[in-house]
Image: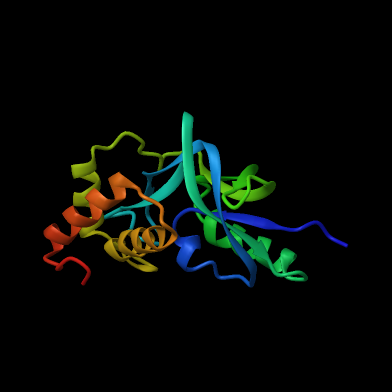
Length: 184
């Protein structure tokens, strides 16, 4: 019998895992935070007009709340291949197996997570929120408009009961910049 294969979702994996999920559990990853710190030149932007995507960036004392997704038994190999194609498209993410803590009792599991490579040219940590909003509002890539990525992630975090004040501010600001009504 194989060990359970968990994947930690903190952004688009929340609402578009793209693989067969047998179980979803709220979980947290300590020592990392979710932040728009990666230029997107494929999925949510182009090389000429990069967008921004969220990444896990290491930070002392940080905690990232998200979901642990247990891959359906028998789909482990195809899921790993799929995730590598999706997440490692430009080598700006590093694949790591990290300990997640389930919110429903504190049990732990090892989960596959994609974290930002700070030495990669797409790393852009430390951008001011206003600059992030300006970039997100104007970018579109192969998987669609950058604002949709922000809105979907924020909506799904809210459904999980996860408060992310920076994302909430970005949603309001990007809606204002793009002329979209709140909730629309």
